[in-house]
Amino acid sequence: MLIREGADRNDTIDLLLAGCLAGIAGALNTAAFYTVGFFSANMTGNVSARSGSPTLE
Image (cartoon, rainbow, N blue to C red):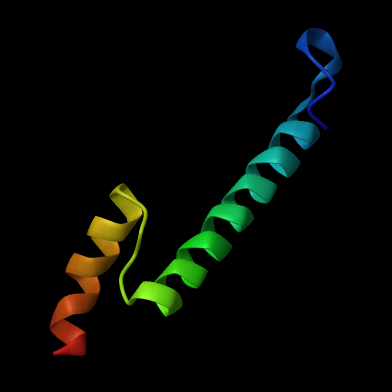
């Protein structure tokens, strides 16, 4: 997946890579949330904390 560059890359490979990276990031966010009690990622953590804080109180 990461070996192909330039003209050898296509939309399918790019979408597969994006999906894999998003899944890994989501899994790490979930693991960190259950471990320390808050989201560890900068942007997604801040947005999620703001959107979730009124419902959790």
